[in-house]
Length: 341
Image 1: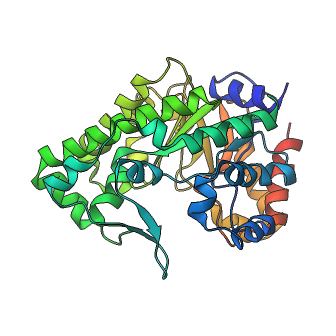
Image 2: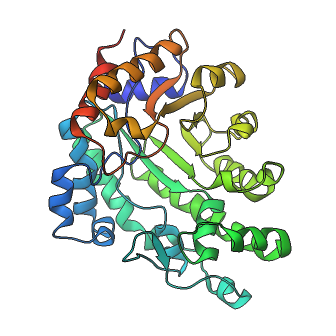
């Protein structure tokens, strides 16, 4: 069985001798080869250049026996394609070109033709697909409408998310109009990624946990459900929503084949709560990768044993790998999973 076959079997909850393994944000600053490339090119330049994006995507696979690659890109390519550019602030975090505040600004956002404005992502996917030769799975991804809207309305990274929440509660027509544009853009974008070779799509609702639980359906879940319904039936969609463990049962009926679970939940408990035909992904604490190989082996084994006999598990972190992660810890993680029986 190839790594690609193993990964796809896990998304379909088929029994396996071990779970497949990959890591969210697996390409990045913890790798010296990435830092060397970043010294010559900006992050945005690497995202927009198919050759560079493909190279960064493949870097972790050359070091580690991962079962899947995730294309190197950024969730904010969607706001940029709509007409709201992004950049990285000097002191850290994201800054948008402008803060979305007026109906005139909203009306200028154009969701048509997103696939053409983001063709560099499709070209990067096609390059990586050719390099993988069908042996490892290839994942595309994008941010949820709610998560993208937080950046657009706040004007970038935020500590309190006051503006997006106020918009949701005080001007629902404006909010819904924005979400409709984002949903349409993401459907077109994901369809393009699938055509260009993605074996699965991960949908990141990174800021789903900031909205009150009773409002999660209207603010986020209904829009993700619409996206999933518009994609090919039974195509593997991994829905990762951070900080919404109380909504996991509802998420299980979103149409997604796989639920990504953050590190604050006991994955063995989640396995008992959601339907058996929904695969689970996760959920080691990313900070473990900053510790020691022995600790990583211990905690990875504990997670694997907690799910022994439960099909449909994809071993992953509960969020993205951190810049402080140690290569020897990543090696220990992958080695522990691939040797486990």
